[in-house]
Image (cartoon, rainbow, N blue to C red; front, side, top):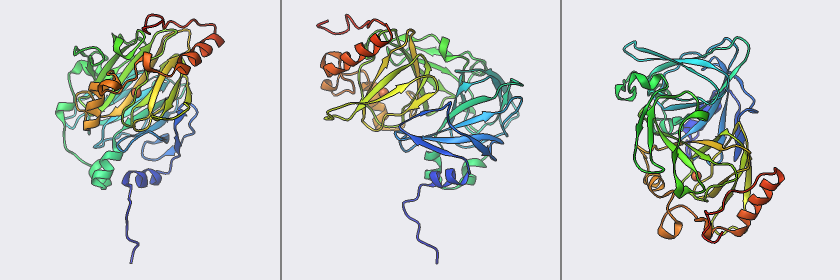
Length: 359
Ligand SMILES: [Fe+2]
């Protein structure tokens, strides 16, 4: 008789069976991840499992060699790509034979419309390209625990394709209110130059945009912190993966009641994910504005969980009013002092005056 099966994680079993490295950590330098040949993609890859990844999503990196391509893929899970380095193109083909091709470069963001066939090509004959993918495969495999259903399924989702312009780098701006303005598209050519919208409630002259990608449940947003500033601390459920787009700095994180903070220093290539209800706060120590991209499961259009819905409504609301954010005037005074001393090391002046009621 075979052993009874219990406490099964169907996604993790599948991932181990793929035969590529699985890298784990609170924060990870995606540029330094070692990849190995991955038969499924016909390219080198590695899974990246952050400790705060939650139950629904994963990351992997894939390297496309100079002049090379990946094997065509088609699957019943959502996938969002952030280009870490390189340039190339992706071709998407629907079941009806419609083809869409777009050209990406470093800091492009794009999504694969659900269950369409796609293939990546490296556009350089000299340099490799490295992409990071965020998917909801853990959710799908743990629900169905049937690999063929997820990877060999012909159901069509025409409502996920969107307008032709959404494959060409254009999109639709959907104004909501500060912090919730949406840009609907399938492809953002360069996050570094994308226009953001003011969001003063999250602190210190910051700005952001919420992306709706391929009409999906995978979420992405991008935020910018001006020079000499930091955002207010806040907390929410697990799975928001924070990628550096430009600049460098650090984030502090702590649980309610902790005496001290933990710290993660970030730069280009970094990703980290605060765990469930872990307070965290981002600090820009660069001589330039710092941008970060966050990818999660549960989008502003389709939040998926009640908790995500509450986060999207309460992420800039004071904890004293039932929200998720610590206002500047309520924060631990060590937070500002540390920021000031970190900036001093680089000869940068803090620009936080006017954001504290008493300063
Ligand atoms: Fe956050």
